[in-house]
Length: 293
Image (cartoon, rainbow, N blue to C red; front, side, top):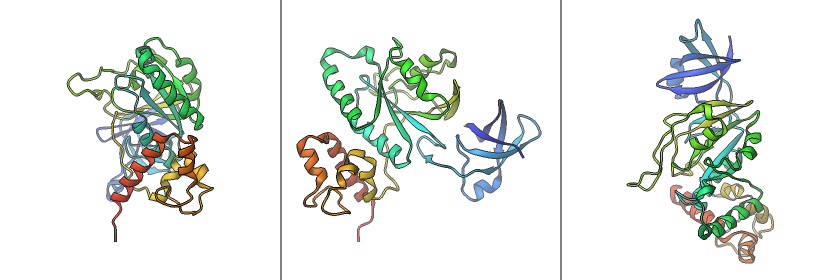
């Protein structure tokens, strides 16, 4: 039977790409029975008598899986954050980074709307960008209006499956339109009443850009660490994992333990203080979620 990759899931149908042809399929009933949901990005086996009447019969093993947005087999995550409107949020960025790091997906940070930055907020933004670059992250600065920085982003997309993710209203769809105007993805402005972005992407869909596939996903503004153990969290902060090797206790959570190398690095400025504050906030959330005996 033929094999392909799900590039869109909508209204109970799965659109499977096989070569250059797309087949509209339903999922087998056994998936529902076993509580398995085919995801965009899944490699699948299917059968189809024609392009509109197919059935997904098998889902191949996934190398990774995200819940929000629902997508699998991602090579890298393009984390899109606006400089302003809404303001750049390192706390929210760190939430995304923890989720991405936990799934062993390569993150690329893209700061958008640079055309709206004023001298007053440029200094702080530059400091954040420099901090994340020093931590080893790739950070690109772009503007969908001036198209500045777009040419730097495009090579990262070649030959890979990338998920575009970020808070609503940061300009994910505008950025994709700037890369390829033929996409004509729907965009919208920040809601003046709610003060946040309006959701313009309603479903997950993989789109061809060059030799790569890119997912434009519904925006969301919160992430929960549903399955993460406290001991795993520091692995998702690369600088803390590195300094943690020098902690006195192997299972150090960098909280109240003595002779903690991470806290010493925060005190000396090697680790940005706000990163440690976010780490402690996330650690407390995980602890509050776990039952205490």
